[in-house]
Image 1: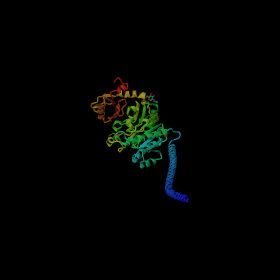
Image 2 (image 1 turned 90 degrees about the horizontal axis):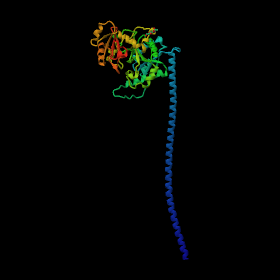
Image 3 (image 1 turned 180 degrees about the vertical axis):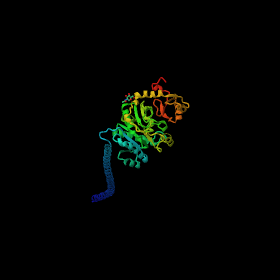
Image 4 (image 1 turned 60 degrees about the vertical axis):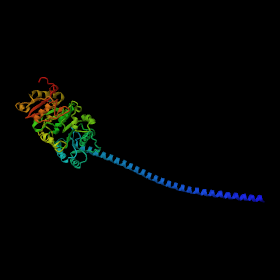
Length: 443
Ligand SMILES: *[C@@H]1O[C@H](CO)[C@@H](O)[C@H](O)[C@H]1NC(C)=O
């Protein structure tokens, strides 16, 4: 009985232990269940946020795709517009050009922001271009967006408008350089590339927006074009004479070769442009750059005695004083020279040296001091020897012609000889090496 009661006690004890363990287990379990629930809740939260993010990302991706499509559409539209513009340009050009007539040269007026000046230039050019329009298609190339210049150019059906839009910032290389000159250099390069490479002209005449032309301007360039083709030692033809002031010129028929690029109204050929274009300067005075010996490499320029362009741009890049002294008194030719009937073979390289030497030999020698006074007492042409640059400046200054040199060459010089008129006779200022260079040994 005692055993049995002991057994019951033990059983009771075991039951109690069991119950206790069960209770602990239950407590632990419910604790875990709570934790689990919390975990699940936070996981749900996490998932929701992830979904939200994914939604946002795919929304953004959708927008990117839409933008890309928009860009593609715009590019396409832009391309179509470009084609349209080119088409219109070509049609405009075809309308201006006779189908059978191969043009002598394109004429481009470089403009920027002076509408009143441009109008005066256009009127002067069209006045004489009208009768030879098919030989000389006229272009106005505008640098930038000045609206009055654009409106002015577009108001003329007789010409083709081109616009140079260049938003690339200019970084000057040396202090004190004017951004304007970088812009001018870029504009020149762009316009000439367009005319020679895109429009395939063989020759281009370049004018600026402050010039008037002479009545025989186009005939002169047509005759000169023939020379340019025949004589590869001619780099370009100019309508300008730096010493072209009224008191220094008289013969509208006379042309000269010059080692000094005259600029201002000039014609060049495609082959010359092909050579210059790749090394065209970023910074100009581009005309000064063209005057460097390495750039014209022994070739010469043709210039007239009497200018075929007149520069009226007092408020341009030229200074006021310079304008009054050198540009305002320029004589613009007013005689209609029949250039077609002129024999210009004397200007060809092989002929010109001896032609020029003969002129020089016929001139009477005069010494540098009081040169003007001595010149008055002589009937014909006169030659005056100079020994060096200061000497040249002293003599040139007495007469009032340009004293300026560039890269060892005086303005307008041919083999160191500067020639101008004084009371209609020719004055030759002859350099120390000029006679030898001209093959003259008997003076
Ligand atoms: C042109 O002038 C040159 C001399 O410079 C002469 O040899 C030639 O015969 C002339 N040509 C004509 C067609 O008159």
